[in-house]
Length: 158
Image (cartoon, rainbow, N blue to C red; front, side):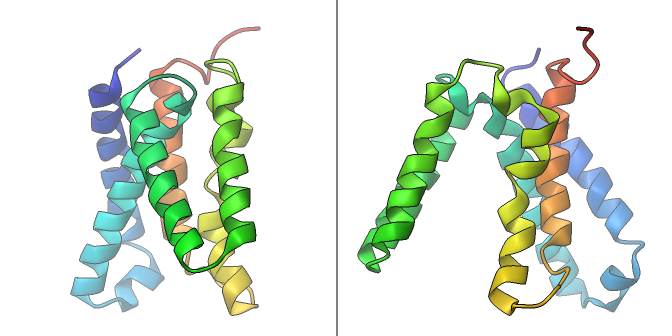
């Protein structure tokens, strides 16, 4: 079971494989090179961030990263008068701390559900079915998957 450096390395490998695979799609072919590079970097970043997410329920580098991001996002929401959104984010940020290690954060359903705002957000704001968030969602899921695989959580018995 790797530490945070191992999870980052594995996530970068899986993320790079995803970026390479996406480069063969028709959508990627239509993008200019500069946008492909930016998309690839964002996908790799998401893979790393979501590879660290499952360990948010214990004192870890992943927990430190996520709670710093939660803090900055919550502060931004408060500065813009988004009280309900800030309260909801604060509430959601507490949930992992209330669970046991290798509880819900180490499940396949969490792997698919936790990154879902990346996919659903563009659809919600555009008010139509769009796939703009799909490559980024896949990057997050691939990173999360790499964590579960490295921790041996995918193929355990019982």
